[in-house]
Length: 212
Image (cartoon, rainbow, N blue to C red; front, side):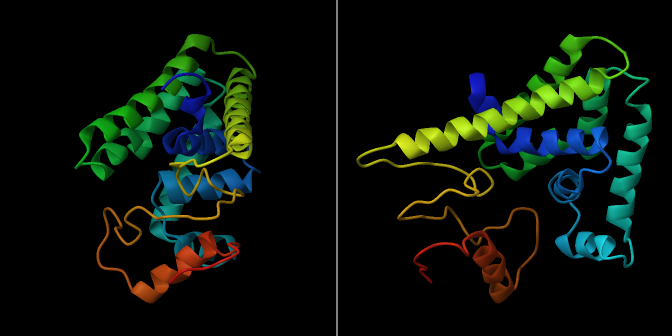
C-alpha cells in the first residue's frame, strides 16, 4: 500500500490507538480501543473496569503495559516505543494468524505495521516531545485518510462497489450492504447467535432498512 491508503487500514488504526493512549493518558477513546483491539480484552471486562467495578486480569495486564510505556516514552526513541508496542501486543503475529487461510493478507498487514515502525525510527531522536510529535502527525494522517475515503465515496456516481471494514465504514451510508462471512469469528469458540446479532445491530443500528 502506498500514500493515504496505508493509514486507512485496520491494523494502522489499531496501532495508532495504542500510541495515542500512551501519548495521552486522558484519551479514554484511544485507551478503550487499545484494550479491545490490540490487547484482546473483552468488552465486558472493559466496561466493568470503567464502571468502577472489578479490573480483571487482561485489562489489568494491558493497563500495566500502557503505564510502563507512558513512563518510558521520554527516555526512549519513538521508534523504540513502536517496537515495544508491536512486541508486547504481538499485533503482527495476531493479524497473520487471523488470516491463516490467506497468508498474503496477514503478511501485508504485518508489513503495514512495520512501515509505521520505520516511520517512527526515521525520527531517530530521543528528545522532549519527539514521541508526541510523531503521534500527532500519525493521527493527522489517519484522520486525513478517513476524510479522503469519505470524500471519494461521496463523489461516487453510477454503479459502484465499495469493499471496506466495519471500522472504516463508521458514519457512512450505502443503499445495500453485504457482509462477508458475518458469523465467522476468528480465534474464538461457538457464540450465541442472538448475542452476536445484538452486536451486529449496534454496528448497523442506523440503517434505513434492515434485512434479517
